Image 1 (cartoon, rainbow, N blue to C red):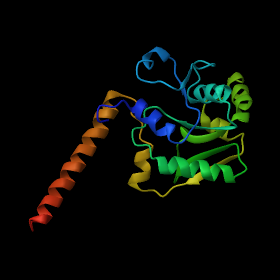
Image 2 (cartoon, rainbow, N blue to C red):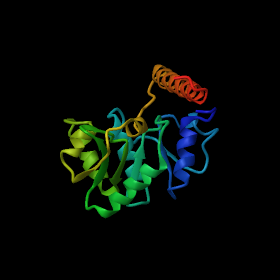
Image 3 (cartoon, rainbow, N blue to C red):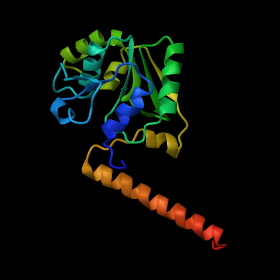
Amino acid sequence: MNGIPIIKRTIDLFAEIFEEIILITDSPGSFKNFVTGIIMESDILRGVGTLRGIHAGLNRTTKEAVFFVACDMPFLKIELIREEIKYFKKLDCEALVPRIGKLIEPLHAVYKKSLKDSIRSLIKSKQEYSTRGLFRSINIQYLELENKKQNREIFVNLNTPKDFKDTFASRARRFLLDRDFQAGSKNGIL
């Protein structure tokens, strides 16, 4: 966005909030040229989806809990992250996950370090590799968010070049429509 890689924007945002930033990646070499001052770690458990990254982060952290986010979320909001952390500290739970209606976002969530053994056991059982499987066996709480565009947009993931193109083409159209509407209303044209 604006010529700055999403991962760089995310790390810069995290630097305003967190003392410790850990990037979990299968290809640390891809990030070494523009990401400094953070811990880079590879997955410990391979081939098991999202849980492997959460496990690696929990295994590596020096903190009691970790806020996890996907590295391809371009619309993160510092206010929501701070709200999530504040709410987590008030609760007695092992994980706090945002929820909009029935939709959850496990990669914009806080997890206690103590979950690393539960995750390892779940993965080793070879019965379940999903975060939903983990959630069925732990003390989880949800941060309920209003179902509105601004909240849904925070959780947008850009997994493919098509996702990127579609997301930003749609934002550009909205910007142009808003700009044209504002210009029209200033000129008395509606």
